[in-house]
Length: 220
Image (cartoon, rainbow, N blue to C red; front, side):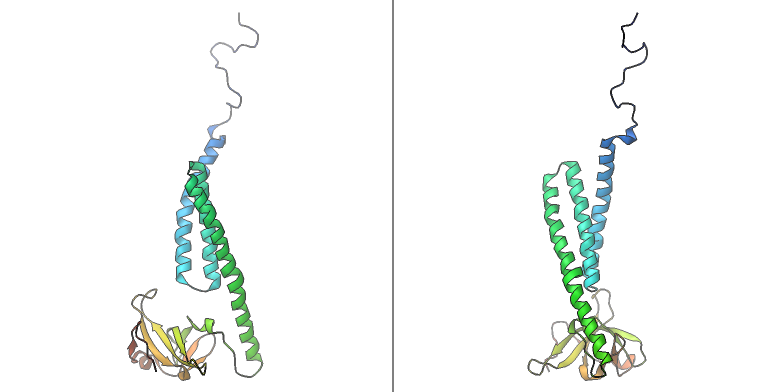
């Protein structure tokens, strides 16, 4: 004789919600989120560091800060789920720093580059001398008289009084700046053509130029 409401013999009573599978448990969902964040965070930070260190222009650098922001959010989730308050607050600060980087490169700097490009395009339509922003010259490909790329413009020297570009430093060879060769090219022998600097000489003539040391540029 069992009392009214008592469970039948051989069948254990179930707590409320015990019929849900473990897959539907909020705890399992939290652990799954933490595992995803632990995977995303280091990958995002690594990719972002590589992108920003490459210095490939305002938009690419800004994209690096977007990826940095994703990484800081992922690390915040890891700190939240694992109870690491220090990790949480550190990435709250980094989140706002990365947002500043996004504004700096995808907002302000990208707008300035767009303004320079627009002025360049309008100046060419006018029929006079084309205008090119100085910031666009650094990193611009350098091609020989046959149109073959021989390097990139690493930097240039400008006269203090006349404001005239005197010479450029052409960078060639190497990987990511390691093992590169620098050569001086007089600005009078260069012209901007199709978003590149055109040399009035062949590759062989260019490579025969004396190399310049990184810390010892020509002063005249």
